[in-house]
Length: 97
Figure 1 (cartoon, helix red, strand yellow):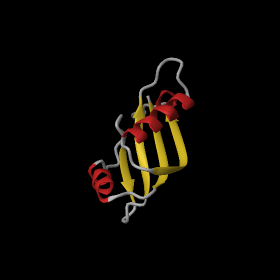
Figure 2: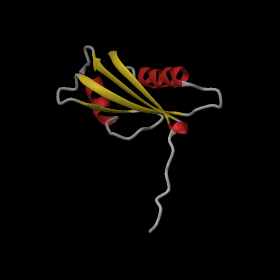
Figure 3: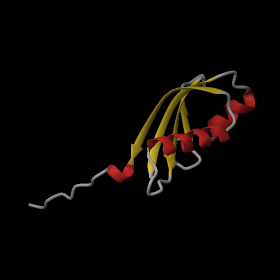
């Protein structure tokens, strides 16, 4: 599983688009993606979870997240993309004393 964060800014977002962004708001990572944004709904952070196949890497995860963002249909400009491969995350067990 990958978690992808896309920072961007909206371009000419109309009232319907603004309402849709507000409805898709949240800080959780989901496959459909969620938005956090500034007060004026002009810049955003889009968080998306992308399933990982055995041979998938950051490029495939980025494309999957960009497709999820495009599915929302809001005109935007991407400023920065960050990808975390959760397969690389190690959880250490706490030792009990």
